[in-house]
Length: 260
Image (cartoon, rainbow, N blue to C red; front, side, top):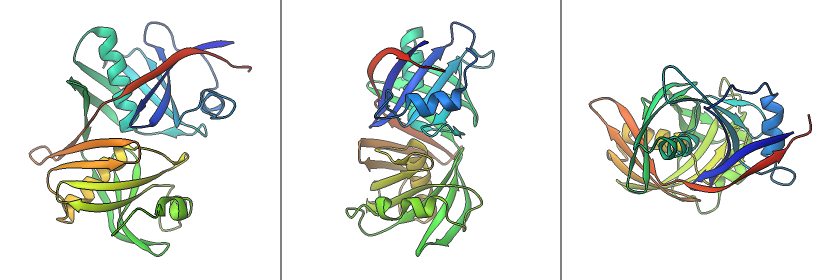
């Protein structure tokens, strides 16, 4: 069976996207397909699989599967990739996308795709886990944010797997180590739940900035250095919402041979 796909990335956080907005969503075992197509040795290779289908409430309905086949509630990088794809198709500079975390608005400004991530919540502040102390933040998925003096030693590679499934948390979490460079700039290393180390994480960057603002470490507009590039987070106090800004890229398209 041949499955048409597009490969896109946002600061190296990469996705295989299946666009079914112009037809019925095929009946596949999508968790199994995600594990197969996201394999970096035997598949296309990606951090996740994204399906798009028609929606009466939005320009499209987006569903995200992690590379291990599990379903993700939200992903800011995938959201920006999908928004860019939909805006290219419609020749418009805005899009409305239905996700497992609700409706999300997106727009294009120059090379940047900007999405409204909504409101983050501090589920629990200053949670001790594995010798670290960090905030547990939710913005459609859970993030454990640890502020530290230096991230050059790649603490995510040393401690991410342990913290992801630490008993201090009710379920698996994404893990971020964040170094504050100034009130408007941070450097972040990422361990994503079900994926491991990734080059970027939009929900993680949003959660880290929100946590930093609540701790009076950061201002309302913050540049986030991730391994794959640069993101910008803008906090809008009047709506208590976060905007995620940055460019995306289409890598290639093709047909994947999947043997069911």
